[in-house]
Image (tube, rainbow, N blue to C red; front, side, top):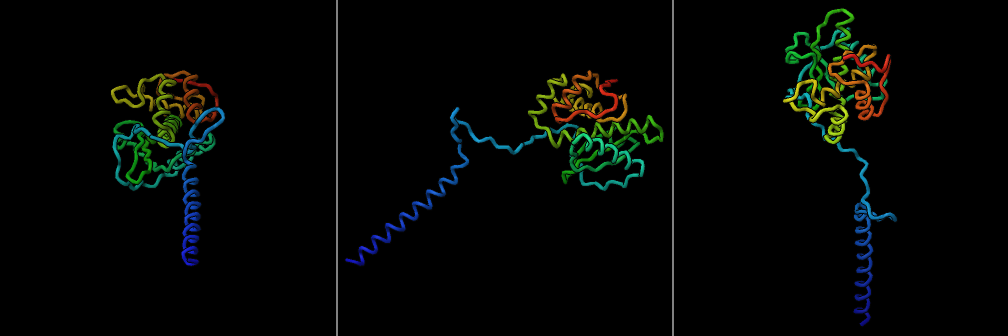
Length: 235
């Protein structure tokens, strides 16, 4: 009889321990459920930002490429553009930069932004390599424009694009039925030329006023454009 009593007691103890363990597990798992507040029920907001980039000027995915070493002049231009972004507090993604004055790699455009299969952004600059102030200024503004595409691709979501489209006065972000200057993606890239170029004349390729350029850039980046001479919106 004493043996039976000990057995029943052991079963009761084990059952109590199991209940405690299961209860603790349920309490831990329940931390992801909505939490009630005095003002009403509200789910805990996840602070991890999700980004859904929209393909912009990336018309295709490039295979892995070997980028030729830059000349001293080219490297100085790239360093200058990266410094302008850094001075504004804007972080660029990993980029490979190449120059092709023949314009073949840019499909006869001044610049192009693409992605390689390893996820690296590729900026190609196809402006003339003349050793003149005008030629180097054009290269600087083209670098800022293409780096703007890279920053956009790495940081902006589809929802961000919808909001910016209204500020930039376009109906669609990257509709190829629209002219180049009427695409939100290109207008936004030009805001980086407006905001970061270190010359008073911005050489903008889109006909937007200063207020719209400033609003789009500041709304997206949260930073103030760099000088000199702002505002200056010569299209």
